[in-house]
Image 1 (cartoon, rainbow, N blue to C red):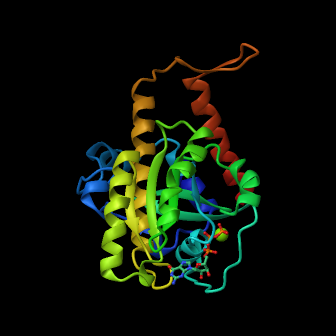
Image 2 (spheres, rainbow, N blue to C red):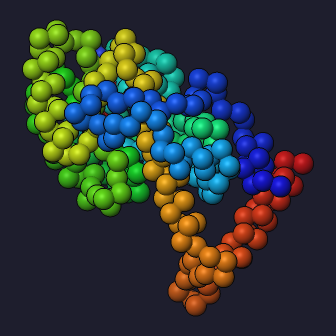
Length: 274
Ligand SMILES: Nc1nc2c(ncn2[C@@H]2O[C@H](COP(=O)(O)OP(=O)(O)OP(=O)(O)O)[C@@H](O)[C@H]2O)c(=O)[nH]1
Ligand SMILES: [Mg+2]
């Protein structure tokens, strides 16, 4: 019995508007994490053949950082709840939302961490930065200073994470408040910064909803693609009998044992349901 089937049957089905079958396109070609038209071929094939290992069970951590009142909470609320609040309520510490997707037929979840931008809450928030696969740095396209602080936010977020493993996004918010001329001026600087940081650039409006869904779909898709590729690399180099994990007390887990544990967990899921 397939482990994937049992896990899916325990959870409610993924919302129909969270199903991703095509790779969502970048916002700006000059500042994209990659510019390919479609998912990596190996990833597509692995999904078709149900060879995605543990990816379907994984939850990828995404942190959203940036100056106070740039619109981090509104961005998450627009996507997760399709809601917008014009009144500012500062985030105290952190908050998080879970979003479940189905990418190329495989379940995939993002845990979206909304952090505080206010200086006095920053030290609480920063303790939650660790273990992020995706870092989203938000700035207000109508506030040059908030763009100027992006590097500091990046530095703080990367202190707690492996800089080579993190996927970075730079997001300009409140696009609805800027005129086309004003916007294109700040966009030039933002694109330059995104290129230097190796981040993918987006501009959104949580008030109108412009680009919000497209943005999060792109985040989910690129995080998923990276996870499947990593999983394929791991399983490609793994042979039956190989030691894949060493515990301090000299207990080692072999590939054979791992398979047994996975099957055992799947059985448990089924017992739990019944
Ligand atoms: N016009 C417009 N206003 C927005 C938009 N996004 C957020 N705002 C407003 O900006 C203010 C701050 O938004 P929040 O989402 O609370 O900001 P935040 O970044 O979470 O702030 P902290 O939690 O303090 O870090 C609120 O009054 C929002 O209504 C937008 O896209 N357009
Ligand atoms: Mg907030």
